[in-house]
Amino acid sequence: MRVSAKADYAVRAAAELAAADEGPVKGERLAEAQEIPLQFLEHILLELKHHGIVRARRGAKGGYWLARPADEVTIADVVRAVEGPIADVQSTPPEAIEYRGNSEHLREVWVAVRASLRSVLEEVTLANLVSGELPPVVEELISQPDAWHASTSTKEMTS
Amino acid sequence: MRVSAKADYAVRAAAELAAADEGPVKGERLAEAQEIPLQFLEHILLELKHHGIVRARRGAKGGYWLARPADEVTIADVVRAVEGPIADVQSTPPEAIEYRGNSEHLREVWVAVRASLRSVLEEVTLANLVSGELPPVVEELISQPDAWHASTSTKEMTS
DNA sequence: GCACTCCTGACCAAAGCAGTCAGGAAAGTC
DNA sequence: GACTTTCCTGACTGCTTTGGTCAGGAGTGC
Image (cartoon, each protein chain N blue to C red):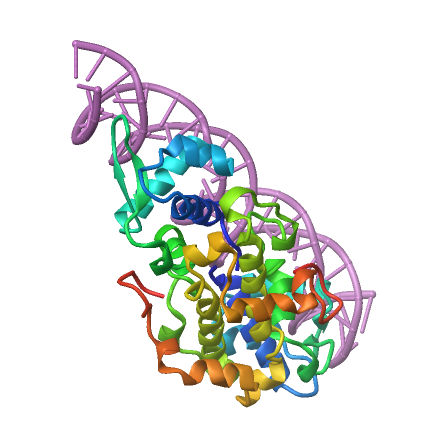
């Protein structure tokens, strides 16, 4: 249930590409703009390329650009490209698990968890991200003050 | 963005405890009921105990039971006990991160992700889980057929 | 031909995951 | 008080993931 550095980097780099209209942007610039280790970023960009999120050209005047318009690439696309499936349980999709006994309904819960993640990640596009005009779903979620500090419900730890 | 075996096991064991009213349940029974390796489960139960989710007594007639009534323990409580904070980015809470340049609004997005996770995990109690009467939020999420199969949006992979 | 940039694989240390093993310490029973 | 039962705890293990670095190869543009 955590977001890896890789996913975070990937989205940030993609955002930078979404903002830079026209012309390839070289990896070095992306790395500097978002303070990401260059060599690590190159691996990430390669994965994004393999998944058809970005395109690239080498040589002078080379660089990376988005394969599709920024408003057609969602954060979910980017995250999936580098992290794989979004809410697997024990490395298998929730709907494929058979629970027995008293945890029979746990499957529904995990499916709901995945659905709620999707409702955010598949709704926000790179265009939304750079413009700051986030979709209503997100605006509503972050408008509640509770969302902004650590655990509120019970006397537990953070987040 | 995945659910570990440990978290899955923890919730299942907790569900089993929620269903067994009155009297401690021994680890072995929990392990059998949910097909969880006993020794691994004992470590998990210990963690749950340290976090005040369950109580335990040793010896004959010993076992584990919930520290609070089943309708006052949420799945979020259990998951946090064994996995720690629920939607950290790079191991720090989303609201604590400063993004620059074109990814400035990414923080809002991660906060929204956490909020949406909470809206499910903090809403479902162990009582809900064993009875199958899931809260409206969850019912609505799982009522949409899309929620039940892998990735729908773009031509990407699963989940 | 040369500079530039991406592409790729190999490698690495540290941490996390999913357990197992061995023994100790309380609680109840006889 | 001995004995059994059950939890409690730490140490250990093998494997994978995370978060990178290093070195070199391959395509592009001038």
